[in-house]
Image (cartoon, rainbow, N blue to C red):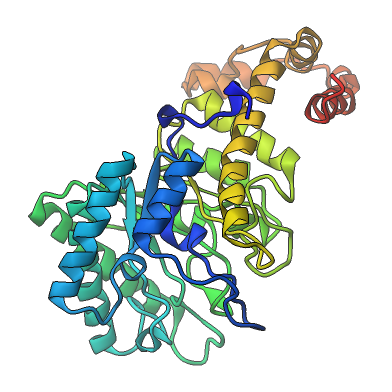
Length: 389
């Protein structure tokens, strides 16, 4: 692999145990790869050049493990981290697989289920903090409905708010300093999930008791499956100061959650995302929430992991080339000739300014005749990505 495409610790590339550990099962067929232990997966990721490994609680410790087995598994995992130098930047809780959560976890009608979900999450937070996690992700895979006959959505929103508030207080009480990252998704596995988009999560966060400790974890596939523009969603989160974590993969519009290798389906959209993240200086982990095809064996799984990181670095290099391309930069200057000139809105409101603006004369026809050569610009970017520029 060329030196420029070799992952390094400063790139902060991470994978979940559930990503490289995916055994290749789907709703139409059983697993096709023999399971690998968390220790084996840590070594696989280290060999591929990753920076860190993330996990759901059940990925690491089986849900029915005894305390002694739990301690042994965690000890072995710590040893593997020490041997490889991998870190644990993020942890999360599985609140969607067990039948107890068939009708939700934090939003369940059953208060016993809601309390069990809180207990499970607190214990998982303990484990994440023990292993050095700084971000704690919440994906409400069962927090949704197939029919609205059961409960008003406002009940679900209220219960979810109560849970996040409770866990934020637990986080503060224990002194963990975890930053919570809420992960939206429009549907699957439920017919409709209660917080479908980044915008929905950002609005919800402002209703919490500790909004400063809560951000979002946007995922490529979760926005693309609804036909939305992921880069725009990430920009909105960044602008709000709430981009606490990010999940990178790829996805075709209108399909089930495919979790393809990063850039495998839509390399151009992946390019604009990488360009944005690098331009704004995003400092968090680049987490790949993807998995290899069902056709892959374990050697191909390692190649998949390497491919996610390599594609990111290739697109990062392309973004640098775009910044250094004189013709492209000249076109950008033509499209935005006034550079960073301020409009009246950017200057802020004043009664005098508003009165002056109302009296200003505009040449509406001249404004309508201005053109922007986006076709030429976009073709140059396409040429760059296809390697002919």
